[in-house]
Image (cartoon, rainbow over all chains, first blue to last red; front, side):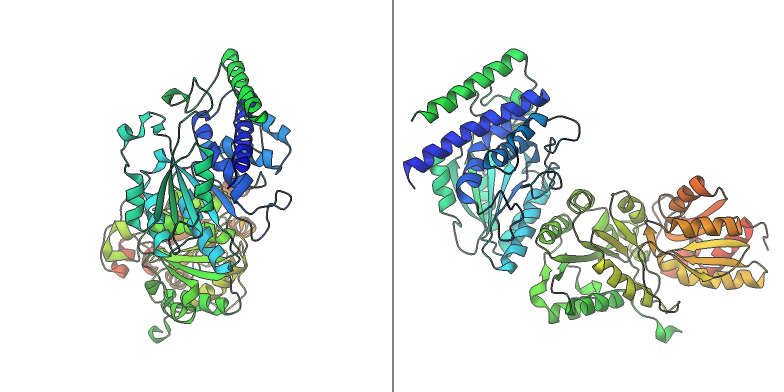
Length: 281
Length: 313
């Protein structure tokens, strides 16, 4: 993996983070923190790892992305728009009546969305089913899903975790966006699901822990998939909630953000500067 | 007649197996429930299209949705409450909202798992599943109808919930094509209309004979599609007979009777008497005794209809 690839993906992630705040300007509010924390993983998926064709979003042997933590959808919308699935001005409809980009993703409204997530604890089961179907198709397509650390207490995740391991689905990779925060506080205080990696490993998954906001290890991890033949891969991505906006980073209050005009302007300035700094490298 | 009775689960499983022979996309999912659902032969003949997950109904319904996005037609059959109430949000979001072509079959429906008690009864499944937009609810009534309903279900593009019982049942009707959304006039009569669905059909037909002896001529309608209901047939019957009785192995609220009332309140304001199980946790006991306890045997149904038409014996 070249430094050039990493630098380009870092720039792309910066642009995607800027697109998130563009959506918040449209809507006036939104699930900021989680969208920012998982953005590097999602950017690498859409711009480096996944086999896809934005002009043919239903391409049969495409890789699938399922956002189990559907409230982080601004991250996916940003990546899809930047990747060319739909015109960027659609981002200006966030929060508007009948928008194609609702507060949780709708596969029937937007090309590139593969499931209607939002209720937590659904994405891993759906992904497991897709992985079973794709494996039977035999054309090498893979499934990637992003779970929030806060949704891990949902029992249905562990039903799917058992099934994916039982069926040896090495075409399935799940990322846990382990930003350590959920709406009411620290995940370890609300319901401690640590150690996440060991839990999945004991279910029969191949596991790895990475810094999920550092593009070089993110890309290296993607390039190493599947981590082990015959096992689904689980990546614990240690991330920072609100990443990219210094005032929001690791702050519980930015799970859902309704900014003032001043805060919004400050956020846009910081993200514009981040893009500029990465463009000149 | 007893020798001709068929186990509805075996009839169902055989119909799925037959359809699977000409459609490679049909797959069967099991939550430790496939063997008891009539899928023994399917498992033997198509082991690579039979997926055993163990007891995880929420997981299975979500997984079924995912498989359907790849073009499979998953069929998942389990004890009715565990296929409906337990994974309800997965049914609602992953099958309904996502519009996935998955077939969920609740067996041992109603109070047919009689002695196992209320945890194993399913008396709200029509009500809760029909609240999910885009889901078709079927309750075929005899072996022949189960067979053609399975084909209609597998041909239909979209999520379907079908409920069957487990008590062996006789052939009740002449075999006819199954059209989703259409009911059938099984017997003509002008004094009252009886609309039935699912496992109660045999008792209703018997009750109609008892009524006939008393001079009450009932129009009997089989309604194997609970939702969307055949509203035209309901309205026509309401206008023709002026009174309707509904019979179902379901709570008296929320199911077939309520659906018929919804149609009548809009389009044909006639009295509707709903027969079913009261809205409480049903008691346990031998199945036929339990049905009689709730007035859902032939004599109980006949007595309720007689009283309703103002002709009590």
